[in-house]
Length: 68
Image 1 (cartoon, one colour):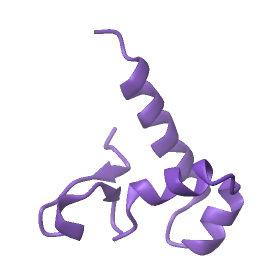
Image 2: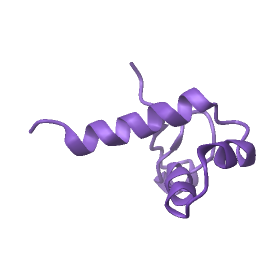
Image 3: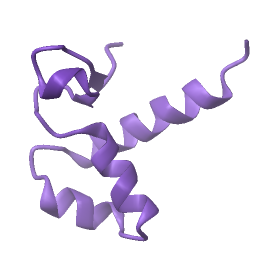
Image 4: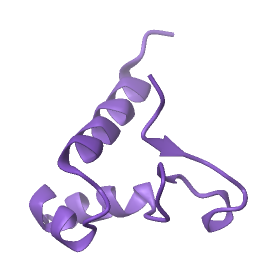
């Protein structure tokens, strides 16, 4: 399965973005860190589906807790 977060030096200077958009992945984490709901993030970035946002969170979790 392809990651929902990609890096491309030609898009947003290579910062991780949601695939097919210019929405920085960091934005999702910034919203949540600030105490905003996932729904508020999704309302502000309609190009990102709920499923995509949840997959991004799952990918981040897996990368943090993956067995080495």
